[in-house]
Length: 320
Ligand code: F6P
Image (cartoon, rainbow, N blue to C red; front, top):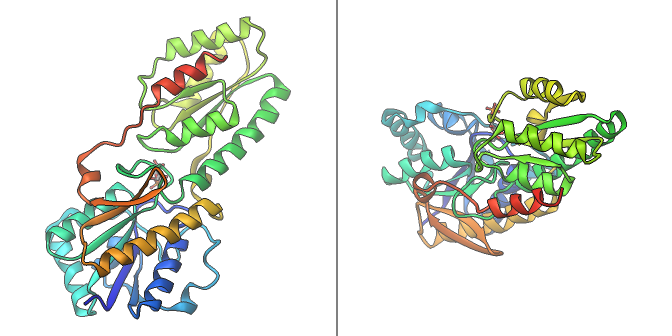
């Protein structure tokens, strides 16, 4: 019987993680299950940093970004000896199962614990939307709004100065945040990791646009593809148009979660606890075509998340 569970947040925080923590505690309370919060992800699990969570410890956190439990990137968790310490710590506290909230790295850790016979469930929390098996991760839609607002603001100044603006957007190896914010923000050029980057072609197309009379342009580009400051210099050189680069950075990770993320957090938490009660361990939760699903934790460690976005990009570039 599952009578006591633990919850942790790990990896990059995302808006809506608190909404998950709150939902888990409240749903569990309803089912007479006790909840322990692990501080700072897997690092806290190994250091035995745990707190009791109850109704009042999760009040007034629904609308708050970040995670009240804290988070960390703890690479050393890939060592078996650390996972053994973690499992021992949980067993000593009488914890029967663990719910992890995070991205691919977090899932990889949970899968290893599951292989060592500790019951785990994963809930997708990351702004990157890069988890295999789910259409949306918790926090992505909030980050999308943040990025679109930033694009709108940059457009104001970019058009006033008739400049070219480059906006670097987070996402690690996934272009979702860039692509969909660029569509919503009406960016003229989109560069994402899923499509081979061709700097020459990009500059050629910018020049073509200028010839057609375009006074300003916004280029949305995913992080880590190139050095955007250097790209700005090159574009300025080749087009004789003032060019500025803005790296949006960690602003994209913060803020109050939008309703979509809060609702998703609730739905996924409920589903996770139901799975635990049915003893369906080693699973992670997703939403596909508006339906909650669960699949093996190791799927996301085996398969790469790719979406068919080329068609969409082609369609958009033909519009300009
Ligand atoms: O995974 C979320 C994310 O914000 C990525 O988009 C980004 O590449 C990374 O985390 C940044 O990590 P950190 O905050 O550790 O620098």
